[in-house]
Length: 399
Ligand code: GLA
Image (cartoon, rainbow, N blue to C red; front, top):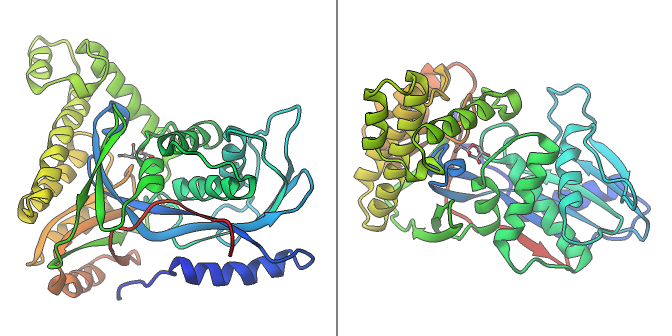
């Protein structure tokens, strides 16, 4: 088993042009492209919808949407990345730009992300022919859906010439599309980092004020290794929503607008008085401590203290596993295996949980040993990626 090489944006573009000619042989050359990266969250999990901090970075893996306006009121879209588990899905969709009745959710499922963004876009969209390709693993917890929404939005900006100046607004529209058309009540993190990512940096995002601060990741000795557990992660199955409700219940009990404003002292007092049940207590404890860990971790990174950063990653995973209960045996096993290897500073699950990926901070010289150790012990066909922080959404108006 070795490190998986993923297509660069340029390689995807080349494949995308061929794919477009194959599916739209009568069309002229595509001239517009929108690009949205996936993300890996380094620390700050399940804190975004609690008004807390997160520290993600944008990935070199991206989703691209490329094509051209077709002078009709119809959108025709073909994707090269259908989830083959989903038998009712097909790789092609066609729908009219609505004039009276709004666009609605339907099949294929992937098309809902495209429709959602069109429905929430700031101006009327024109008909187009387009193809979608991606190097972000689907359902791997690396925000393949946010990258599709952001690629779609950027493509629509290109074909309408109507660019959104306030990038936070762009991220919020994509989040709204996910809420309304994918039925996932996600926080803002994934769309935010996919829009705003800064090359060479992670972003410390304050999800209350939506202010952010780039934190440089310049140290060459250590790298971030992503391991895909190959356990399909699905956020629309109710567990994510349940966690949101439990956090709301905790903030109501603590009489604060969100857990961002709660403290462990408050929480322990309410617990001591017997006013909070054990599950809600544990959920809140995760969020309150994770917000603190995220601030400390950003601080540690800024000071070049990678050892401390790694320890905080470990604590984050343990809290997600034991208190927030969003890990799974496979993610726990991957984390344990990685932590055994000398040169690993920290390892944790990343993203919503219940499958998907882990992220490991490891000395560059020890990467191969981690890969070998995991490949020997973990039997579910893991995939490995060494990633560097990349830039956010891109809009191309000529190709
Ligand atoms: C998913 C959601 C994000 C965030 C993470 C957990 O990725 O889309 O908004 O809540 O889970 O940190």
